[in-house]
Amino acid sequence: MFSAFTRNELLLSMMATLAGDEVDLEPARKAFETTTGDFRAKFAAAVQARLAGIAVPEVFIDLPDHPEGLRKSDLEALVRPVADGFLRSYPSKGELLEQAARIRRRQQQRPAWIPRVGPDGELTPSPGTSSSVLDPDPEPDRPLVVAALAELGEVTVRLPAAGAERPELAMVPGGIGEWETALYTVLGVVAADAPAATVALDATANEAMVPEEMRWWASEPPQPVQATQDPGIASELLATLPTLGGLPVSDTPEGYEAVINALACAGDWRYSPRWQLESWDRGDNIAALAIARAAVAGWADESQSGVIMYVYGGALYDGESLVSAPSPLHSYLLTMIRSVDGTDTVDSVHRAILSCPGEYWCHRGGCPEVDIPDVGALLTRIVTAAQAAEVAAGAGGWAAESYQRLYGHGDGSEYADSVLEQLTAILSGVGWVELEQSTWEGGLEQVLLRRGEHCLTAVYDPVTRQVQLVDGKSELDSTLHMLADDGVLTDDGERESIDTSEAAVERWGTDLLTAADDLLRGRITELPQLAFPIQATVLGLHPQADGTLRGPEAATLARHQASALLATAGVLVEPDRSVLPADHR
Image (cartoon, rainbow, N blue to C red):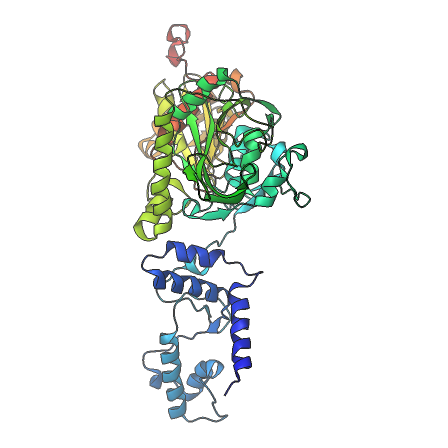
C-alpha cells in the first residue's frame, strides 16, 4: 500500500509531466480544439495527444496467422525479443505458441497512438494510420531568413520542403514576395489551423511600446519583445511605423482610394489566430479584454496588384460594455502596391487607421481620424467569412480538410489550375503556340512557346511562387540535342535536317519540329526585351502550399498578375504581319 504522501507525490509528478511549465502543450491544444463531441471527448483527445508525445515506442512483430507452422527455432527467434513476461532459456514449442498468443493479444489491445517500431528499430504504422501520421512532416519545411521589412527585424519564414539539388527561382530580395511571406509569418497566418487557434498577447510588451513620457502610471521597467515573437507587437508596429521596408507609409486621405480599390480586388482572405490581450484602461483604471485578428490577401486588377491586410476586433471593459474596437490595439487597413510593371518592386504603402487607442496609449501619440465612405460592406464580408473559417479549421473531418484544401496547405485535389496554364492561355490569345511543357525534378515547371521568329520560355517555381520570363531561343536550341539523341535530328555531313515523318511528329509534335527546323535555318531571333529575365511573385497563394491555384479567387488573381508581367515583357502585342517575311506570316 502506498502512503498518502507517496500517492500525492505520484500525482504531482504526473501533473508536472503532463502540464509543467516547460511542456509544449500545442499538440494537446490542437487535439482539444479539433475534436468533435462533448467535453469528455475533447479532454480525452488532449490527454492522449500529450501522452503520445512522451510514450516510449514499443517493439511490434508480424505474427503469422498460424505460428504453429513455424519451426521451433524460428518461432523462438520471433517471440523472444518481445516476450511477454518471463521466458525460460529452453522453452518448449507449446510455451512459445502461448507467448505468441499473448503477444498477439497485447499488440491488438494497444491504442493507435502508442508509437511502435519493428524489430530493427524502424518506425512502423499503427493500424488505421498512414505514414503522414507517423511523420507528419517527413521533409521539414525549409527555413529562409527574410530581411525585407527591416522595421520588424529579420523574419524566419518557412518554405515548402524541396530537394537540395533542385533548381530554384529565389524571391527577389526586398520585393513584395518577401513582404507577403514575412507578413504571413509574423501575424501567424501560415499555421494549418490558424483561424481556430487563440494566441495570448504579451500585455507587458505591448505596454512597453507606449512612449515613456506618456506612461504616467507606475510600472516595472519595460521589457520590449521583438515583432517576430509576438503578433500583437508586429501588428502595432505595422499600425504606427512611419516607414515599412524603407518606404514611407502614407496615412493621408489621398491614399484611401488605393485602399478601397485593393479591398474590392482582393482575392482569397486568410486569417491569423484570434489574439487575446488582457489589459486595463489607464483612464478609468478598469480591466479590459481585447480580441483581435488579422486577415491577409493578395489583390490585383487589370493595372496593379499587391497585398492588403486588415486588423479588426473588439473589447470588453469590466462592468461597462462591449466595444467594436480592439483597444488598446489598433484596427486598420494596410495596403502594399507593387510596381505597375508587374515585377516585385514595391511602389507604395498606404494605411487607413479605423480605430486608435488614443494619444495616451497610441505608440505614435494618436492617429489621424479616418472616414472612408462605402467601406463597411467590404469589411463585413471579411469578418463574417472569418467566423466560418474559425469553425471549419477547428472542426476536424471533412470541413477542416475542405478548408485546408482551398485556403491552406493541406493535400490538394487531384487536379488544380496551374499558374503556367493561366499564363499560356493569355499568350495563346495573342498568337503564341506552345511547343513543349516540362516539369523539372523538384517541381520547377517550364513551358516553351513560339510566335513568328521568336521563342519565349516561361518558368514557374511552386515553392517560391515565382514566375520568370526569358527569351526562348536557347531553350529551343537545347531541344536540338534531345532530337539528335532520338535520331530525329540528322547530319549527312553537308546539312543538318529534321525528320518530319509520321513517327517523329507523333513523338515530338509538328510545331516543335517546325520550330527546330527554323532554328537550324536561322529563322529564329532573340527577343531583345528579354535579354535579361523578368521575374515576379504570384501573390495571394498560401506560402506553404503547393503553388497551385486552389482558392476560389486564385485563378483570377493569377491571370491579372500574369497579364501585367507579360505586358512588361512586351509579348502581348501581336506583330504586324505585313512587315514579316512570307515564311514567318
